[in-house]
Image (cartoon, rainbow, N blue to C red; front, side):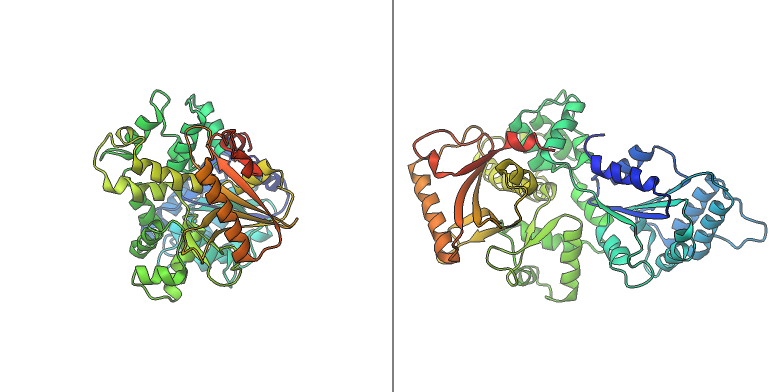
Length: 473
């Protein structure tokens, strides 16, 4: 397995704890939650079941009971029908466990649990009763629950004010691969990638293992993107719609929010989002924004100097941004291989590269040698210049230094010429004047292949190139 070292360590540790364990693994759909569990434990489950998308409550229970029978459950002649309610279904699971007379740990795995909770279903109270009323007292039980609908996991388990509140023994938020993990994955599959291709693949697919596995080593990156994303038969052609339909019961407003954020690179306030999508700035919008954030599609952050008010929402999922920019507008099956190196591609590259860097803040801080220094990360837009001056990434450090990071995508070493040197100096001074900071300001260049040596290169006190990030797990 590539990466996931810490997650596997945690799971193995819990499997040997000798206590009842209730583990929840959540994260973006396609990020590899099920793969992690099955690679860690193989098929060593006492019971396993996967919820079914878009399936009514009774059919879910029928399939659940079928799984119980496959794992050895035999109902008594006078037993009540376990498909009639979730209380009966979980009671049947309890009986299966009770009659097993285990000699060691029993692993229970319920995948895609959010899909099992239909509207007006008794699933949640029945599950609460099963765990709180019995299973939590059985030291030989380890229950692992997964779900792509992170909003359901958060609402019904983590923030639930009823029986499941504070009942999990461990929570694992599974993140996409980093650049370094993507490089290791491609190498393991024999897919040849130079630094530029590796970055561009991340700009398109993010670090989502399910997408990466579709790349085939006999094709160039451009041909792989055509094959995977463009043309009616491409496997990811309709992936965005599938994501929305499987995660949200009524996806239209979620899509509206994502489209609104996609049109504004710097992000939008909650009020601006409500105005753009003609949606009330109330509880429903709060719920939509929270659920999109918990699924990893957007992020909420405060611009520099606005710790309390003025929070912005920002589209962060690379594949969704790529879909909204290109896939949904394109019918051609060979679009990407014929699109390289024109003005539109360059404009997209600059923005998408920023998102790659923002997804690797930890690695950037390590490359700068400041990983041990507490810091706050934000961006900044000038007010006095009408928004013309902005800084992509601001790292405000506790050691009284602020890294003002300029993020530049280039196909070779980036050259700072006289004109750009002047722009950078004016930007730093505008930041100093408007923010009234007394901290030292370190201009930091984050580029693909570093800064080209030259007369004006010395303006940057520090720099980070992508080769450094690729080498950092």
